Image 1 (tube, one colour):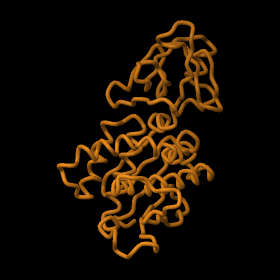
Image 2 (cartoon, one colour):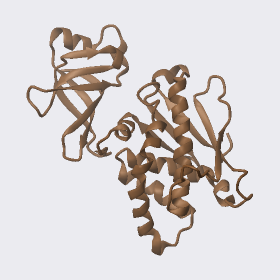
Image 3 (cartoon, one colour):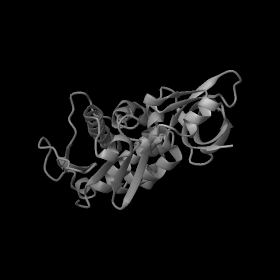
Image 4 (tube, helix red, strand yellow):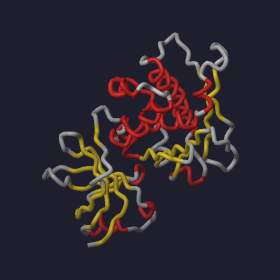
Length: 278
């Protein structure tokens, strides 16, 4: 693929067979189109596109190759605008739209600290006056939430047809995983931190929902309540595994998990990656 393409790759679940649900994929591509168009407009003018306003750019892709789970995205200038008016963006588009999408999705997915690097890279490429940088960054961060409906479209396949989406650009990559995607979809603001996100808990399994890859476990902090944990452990789909054994024999297990919390500290949900006998 040419260096100026942004490569989008969906990984795991159905994509192991190079299959993605077509409706989810369509929603994701529509969301990418809207998020990139409005994001570029926000960085350039400080405003979003109006309903009757068209973006200076068209976002195009090559038809997917048979056996490939990668989609190549490229910008071209709309014919309604003067040629070469945005030539510098087109020349560096992989870096710009890669950092733009990464920064916006990470920010709305509860990874504000990680998103700062990507958003600053976009500002650098626009060659903003550094005296105005702080004010402009605050303006963009305050406006980002208005782009959330488009971000929710972008992450539609995650949790349905794939476990994650990988953005590859200019030798770098950003992984948008299930916890980040679920935070984007959440009505409440979640915080997904890189530190202290992996935890082990000793518990029992009180139910299994195989169709949703979920287990029911006692709430770690609230007596008498239960949580549904999303399981990403490959052995979960085996006919006989540690999860079914723990349920049928009422055995305790040690789970390796990501626990996401609201900003008030209450648990939002749990992702389970490994179960071990105690």
